[in-house]
Amino acid sequence: MRCGAEPVATVALLYAAREVVVTDLGPDRDPNLLDLCREHVDRMTPPLGWSVSDRRSFAASGSVSSSVAGS
Image (cartoon, rainbow, N blue to C red):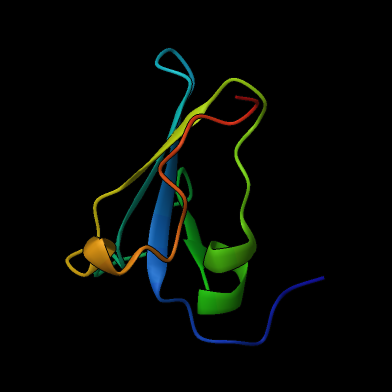
């Protein structure tokens, strides 16, 4: 099943660092990254013990929590 909404952000999972990195939508699709719509980015929760780093140009708006999950 796929979401029909347009993607707005690209998400990378950095396993070694236990970090989820959210960036502005990349210009080209990369099969190693996740392109998510606004709703799915806003609802996203990291795995337990992982942190989220929102590096989008408007990250100050606080759309995605930058706290460590499980704390």
